[in-house]
Length: 206
Image (cartoon, rainbow, N blue to C red; front, side, top):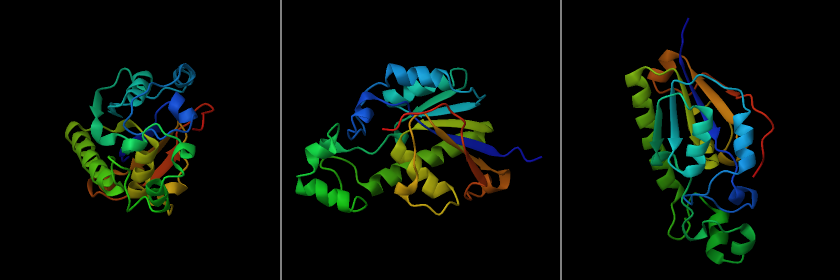
């Protein structure tokens, strides 16, 4: 039987900034105590590699979910850098013309002192190739990638056969989507063979 490769894309536990609906990119707040408690109650799975964004909210989530697996941190899997808009809310920004232009066309415009979508895309592509090389070299078969909502949306549009746009994926905190490749598909860089939601307890939206 083809053992294949599984990669679970898991969104970090919720933070206070998420609950306040602030733009949270490279800022580094912790997850809430309630989020930690929910993560602790999730079903455990035996991952043989855990890769995490190097930001605190992901590191804290990974520490709960896979304390016994080999662990790697990577800045490549950070959320988009929102620059001067970090930790601001829509209400605080909506009267700024530069912000309205970005909201109307985020694929072309960029936050001031922040990151464009194309820059984020290039960074994530490099990070994925690095992860894939490590998986192949060490023959991992069940990988957990703890990262951010925007990162997961991008990877799902890139790696799955689903006909959904970037914003059509609903990615809740403390939930995951497992992507599975048969060995040949993985080696040939094809889109994943199948995907499924990871069983979790009730999760917060934010």
